[in-house]
Image (cartoon, rainbow, N blue to C red; front, side, top):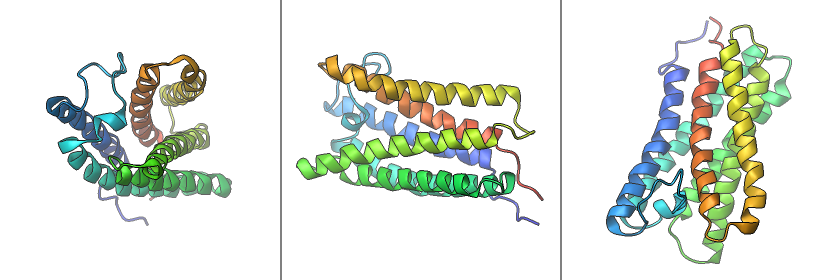
Amino acid sequence: MRAPERIPLRRYAWLVAGLPFLAVHLAYLLSIREGYAPACMPYVDGCTSISRAARHGSANLLFKPLMLVNVLMLALFWRRIAERLRALRPDAPRRVAAVLALGLLAAAFLALYASFLGAEGHVYQWLRRYGITVYFAGTVLAEMLTAVLIEKAPAVTRRQRALLATLCAALLGLGLASIPLRAFDDDGSLINIVEWWYALLMGAGYVAIAAAMPPPRR
């Protein structure tokens, strides 16, 4: 008999999604106040990237520790997801292991990104750039693979399947669209818009996966 979860998975997913959302938007408000970033609606105007919104001043001091806390929360989230998947899909141990590996890899590279955000120099820029790239890619691949593994579970409703499929399609579409956009996005605003929406939809993915995940067997 399994011990009851201290924080139910669905509630925990809201925490995992909510903490970075809060950190990014509070950091952006601080950057606007201190003159480090222009004021706009970044999801529409793309006047700043997430990195620029949290790179300097008080914003950086707030953003870094919150994101490092989020790294630990993400690692625990993907461990819990993997435990549920092992019980649900004992026929797919390798794919379940891949979900866990991708989730932990993404968390590790988020830690790399957050740790070097605001540091100067080409090496630090490279670490930040690849940190956020692997974090985004690893997270989305883990979410997509999880959605495939639970798609045929009896407890998953048609609405939940449709939501997961829509989120996965949107994330894949944004990722693919960002490749040609770079060719003619002179001021970077289009890529910034994609980045803000990508981060938002990834957070929604945590919540949607947790909501669709069948409860643990007693």
